[in-house]
Each structure stands twice: as C-alpha cells, then as structure tokens.
Image (cartoon, rainbow, N blue to C red; front, top):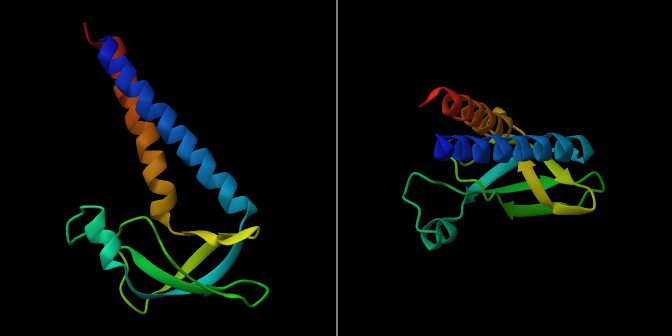
Length: 126
C-alpha cells in the first residue's frame, strides 16, 4: 500500500510539475511556424534509442527575422521531413523551443492522471 501511494505521488507530482511548466512556458513564449528539415540520427543512436524514435531538426524564424535551426529533443514518430510545425520559443533564448502540439500538453496531463489513479488505488489496497 505504501509503495503504491509513493509511486502514485511521484507520477502525480511529476505530471503536475511538467504540466505547469509547459503552460507557463507557452504563455511566455513567442510563436513561429517552423519546418522539419531532417532527423538527428547521431542523437538517436547516441541515446541508445531504437529506430522508431526520431529527433526532428526544425528551422524557424524569430520575430526579429533571425533564422534558427535546432534539434527537438523529444523523440517522436509524428513528423515527416517537410512538415510545417507550430513552434513556441523563448524570446530571451530563441534556441529554446517546443513544438506546440497536443502531445506537449497531453503527456504531462496523462502522467498527472495516471499518478492520481495509482495514488487513489493505494488507499483502497489492503
């Protein structure tokens, strides 16, 4: 029971932290449209991930017109070369960005609700 409560609390707190962080960073960010140029295969292999994890290299322009090309450090199978993506970048450091899609909000929310479920389950296990 105690182990279940601890595991649930871990996922609950992690999900809440990441969800809050995502919402705050999206509010403070500038938006741009980017394009997936290619995938970073050296990162994929150096992290020991299988062939299904793709790390897109995205190019976008800031409001000031600066062209940024950076690797998105969230492995995904949802993008193809040439796809247009909505990007939220940090105006203080334009190289910090997230692809603004449902996945970037869905995963932390999923962690939160999974943690809540496991935590509540811990109260009913005897």
